Length: 470
Image (cartoon, rainbow, N blue to C red; front, side, top):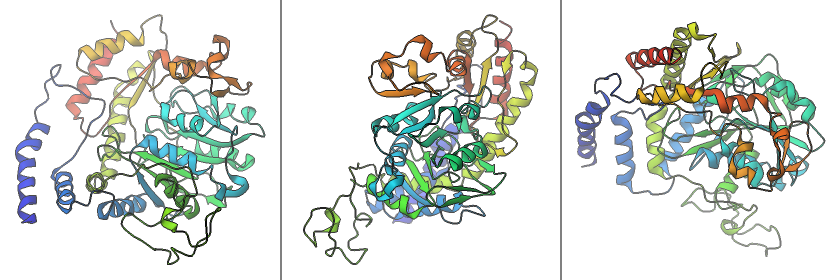
């Protein structure tokens, strides 16, 4: 019976989804999206297969997904990647930074008012977990072209309170991991890679680095595995999707178990849902001030959350993992095609750049107006949108100018400045992040996702060129 259902599901996909997804492109009428889901009948079949089992919480498919992505993230010098699924990339970032506050890490754990190096030109939930854990974000300016952290400004911003670096590979372009690891090694800092936009990217390190918590890393590896913890998002705009969802990954079994605890209500027990007594000592523990033998299933070692996914989400992810490398390669091919064809506009735009050490998995193709007096970003974006070409800014722009922070008294630092309440910042403070402000005012990006055809890319190129002449 199940076999018949799945055969019918494939037929339905071919009759409905495949036909819709293969509709001919009509320039100016068809929408050229910045991102979108790319899928086949397999995603629908695994989703239905999971739903027929009616195992509603994470189960068989979640295990398969974690095994698949773990294998995908492995490299010559990183043999085991422990993967934990969560319900979003934002939750992944929350779990990542929260895990480093665990007392189980001893003297290495992050404590209230410790400082974390980050950037203001990015997505809000790369910053929110720092603040939510009562840590102090230290905002560093970015480079134009890569839109990643300006590593030359980090060391002068480090104090005795600096304990971690948490930054994203902006728009899927890897940041300078050699410089970041060199600094982390020198100052004994944790490194969290927000890899939500960059799944599938790789970076070739120039040497071996020895980091805190006994981590050694060298050679060529996938981004997200080079630091202590990596995070991914599986929202439809990203490299793969399961609708909503995310992941935390680390080669440290200790950190993995802590992350698992934070994800699962903060409990000390590591049994998967529906399983009991994995440790064979369920009623033999004595933790905190609890009586000896108190049920380990209901013993809590952290102030945690409930951020799990469903097995139906994981089922979609399993099918998507068979496409992930092809998706990453197609994104980069589209990115290179745009870069080549728009080279003629290098006097008008700052074109994106990639380190020779990196192979990106681009999330988008960013352009920055060189002279806003000649033409404004807003006028170009308005024209492109009128041509049915979807555009995006670099997320929050300068997050220090967002109402979430201008109305808040949370503690922040800007580079080597003093710790201040965010709502007391004045223009003289914020404009220190000069490139971040330029990104906020003059940068936009368009899509490179695998659902874009060459015809769509050529149309987009023609309209971007046309926009510069208006």
